[in-house]
Image 1 (spheres, rainbow, N blue to C red):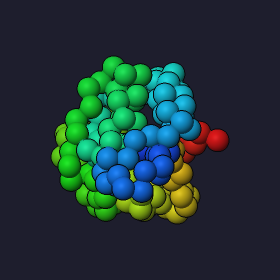
Image 2: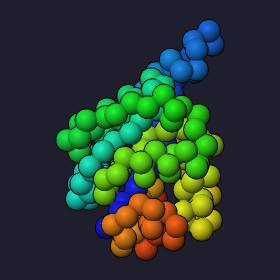
Image 3: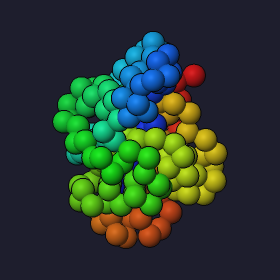
Image 4: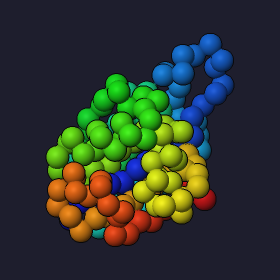
Length: 156
C-alpha cells in the first residue's frame, strides 16, 4: 500500500512587512492548529515512513509538530518551497517509502490535492490534511492511477 499525506503549512504571521517570505513564522492560530491536526493524524493510526517539508519557517514549524506527533524526523527540502504539484508528488515518490507526509505551500498543494481527488478537493486551507491511499506498493504504479481512497481534514 502507498500513502501520501499533503499538509499545507499552518496560518502564518504577516505582522512584519519587512520580513522575507521564507522567514515568516506561524501566527497564534497556526501554533494552535498545527499540533491539533498533527495529533488528529496520529490518532487516526497513520504511520509515516517519512516527512518532507519546505525549508520556509512556517512549513518547517508545521512539519515539526507532525514529526513529533508521528515520531518521524522531518527532512527539509529547499525545492519544496513554492513547488508546483508535479514536484511535490515527485519528491514523495522519490523518497521510495510506503507512507510519506509532504508539508508545503499553495498553490501547489491545492493543485495536487485537486488532481489526486479528481476535483473533489477544490482548496487546501492552511493546516489542511489531505490523505491519499493506493493499493499499489510501487510509487510509479500508484502515481499513474487514481487513489483508491482520499480524505480531507481541516482545522475548522
